[in-house]
Amino acid sequence: MPRTSTDAHRNKARSVMAMYWLLSPSVYGFEIDGYSSGQSQVVVAQTALSRGLTLDYVPSLSRGAWQAYAARNVGDKKDVLPNVQFYFCGAKLASYARDVDFDADYVGTLERMMRALGKPTDVNTKRDPWTGPGGGFAESVDIVWVIGGDKTRLSFSPEAHTDAGAVRNSRHASVTHSSDLPGCPEAQQTNR
Image 1 (cartoon, rainbow, N blue to C red):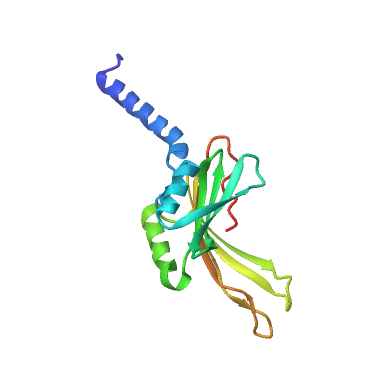
Image 2: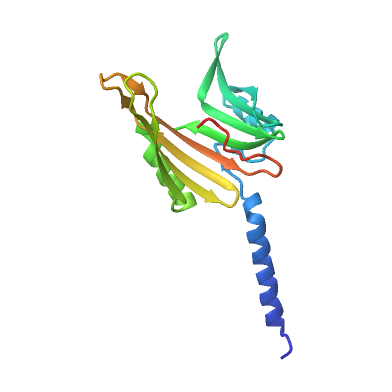
């Protein structure tokens, strides 16, 4: 049976869809808080500066990779903000992490992520032995979304106490957005 123009259109549509699915893992990327995967260090620094922040760069253990921590100048002192962290590979932004105020914004952040990304790909719980006084465990929950070469992780560690009631580790929540950039090691190297 000879091919019709309808068959040619179907085959072309299939080819376009196949190309989309093949390319989408590397082109999706993240764009959050004004930062986007693949942005240069200069653009990230300019965005941070527009918010009154500077970046302190630290070489990473991976070759060609850099981590940066946001800092705010308070008078003549620089106050490094442990709650904002960037990971660069080949001078391109591969990962961005920031703290989330558990009491004020954790549930709202989770709702926004579920609306934007759908159901999580995975939910992990961890119980790591606590080696400090009083023993016990440090617990955490990671909610993970993976779309192509991009990963978003919302993490929470509840406050834990020793048997005597002292705070063993403080409550902490954060969100990390990362993209696999060509030629770069996995971007999950932020300390979150």
